[in-house]
Image (tube, rainbow, N blue to C red; front, side):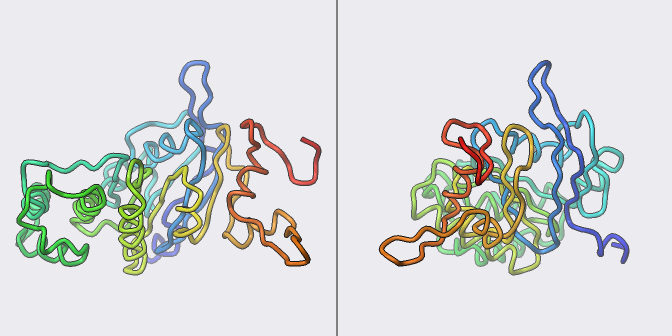
Length: 265
């Protein structure tokens, strides 16, 4: 990787637009993701989060705008982008007939990597799955399957990982397991773009949070910056800081319409 590309953001999006016939899904999306950070793209169902991820991972072509991943343009350098990323969708894509270790070895072999057994063992240890490595994936809990899925996506050490609603359908304990795995990814220098509709997930994990609503980014900042958008509430003379849920509902509105702080609903 050249020095010039190293100095660029891991992900760069400007004016991204996408429509399906009369339905305008993205209406000019702009954001950047710093290298080695966790960026949460937060929004309700149908807000366009998955569409953004599909464009960034070269699975879908934008109608307008530009996007770059790891210094490569998603439209003109798609092969380079695909070599730089890994995508984990909303449901674990593991082979339940195979064991956890066999799933990892299979992916390593498909990528023509040397010593796939060592790679599998290293990832099993990294994601606390060593004791379950010889068991069929069908016997895994939801959290274990998701952790295995993420481990499989890391084979080849991609610098950028897209996690599209990775905790959908998981119980609270499984979600915590996945959260820890995501934190460890970023701690080792991997850039993570996380899409989620769970406010606490973004609050727990993200270095920066962008709220996508009706095809546009309506706010982008750190959790602290987003909380400053609302004044603290005073309850019995005790100052109460707004939660991310307060910020989200104020900006998006209970009925799904934009609402600017300080204006009448």
